[in-house]
Amino acid sequence: MRKPVMLYLLTLLLAACDVPVTPEPTVVGTTEYIRIELTAQSSEQIIAIHVKEGDAVSTNQLILEQDPDLYQAQLEQLQAARDKASHRLAELVRGPRDETIALARAKLQGVLNTLVIQEREYQRISELVTSRLASPSEQDRTRELLELARANRDMARAELDALLAGTTTEELAQARAALAETEAAIKTQEILTARLAIRAPTSGIIDALPFREGERPPAAATVAVMLADGLPYARVYIPEPLRSRITPGTDARIRVDGMERIFTGRVRYVSSEAAFTPYFALTQHDRGRLSYVAEIDFIEDSASGIPGGVPVEVSFPDIPQG
Image (cartoon, rainbow, N blue to C red; front, side, top):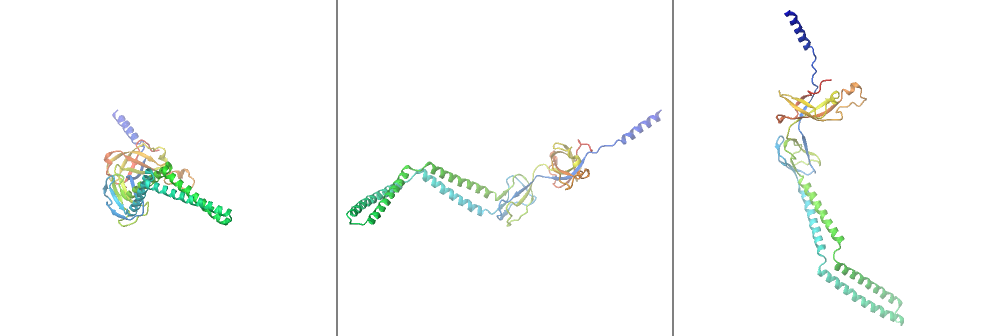
């Protein structure tokens, strides 16, 4: 009686051993940190580098400096233009000086006296022409001088009226706009000058310094590379058969090469475009060659300090292998 029972239990045990275990889908990649590239705004010479590769830096810490002489000279030129525009506006607000008005009055009186003389001369010549003691051409010449004197009178009177009326609202508006324009240009130049001092936008580690002191980097060239502080993430490639089942928010297990502990992670991003795509038509065999870049965050504080670039193996416990 005991023997059949033992055989039955052994049969069940063997059957249990034959049950296939569905493995978790696994992908591979490397650990990464947020990479920040600091660029040069101009091709000015690097005059000082204050850090070394591998140094830890804090937010706003000075990393390197470029020669500011040219930008400083341009700034001083704009400041002089600002002062000129400011003085011009003050002059227009104050209005014309008393001395200027007095000068305009004297000028008008002078042309009025000249006009009286020209009128008398024209009258005299006209009488002589009537008496046939002067030629008509002489009368024409005095008439032209008379018209010129009248024009000078009108111009002098208009100048005096303009001074007495004071500055127009349009002139004041133009002066204020000119001053605002120069002040905006100064602010822009100050920002550009300040950017010659390259500072850390956040705390992290200096990963690379491509240029040395004394060199002239091209404008927009990367002059420093930082790895931002914080937890790392795993950058992996998802094969096409798993792409539809792995989405942002999917839980993951991360095995870091050289470490026994398994870390908990969560998918943050999966690319919608394949990283490797054959140029020919995608057959069923070809589709299996597609891979999609994914980024998986470590969500445990104990992951802090894991070096970047270390190989990892990532599995997804909630997704059975298809």
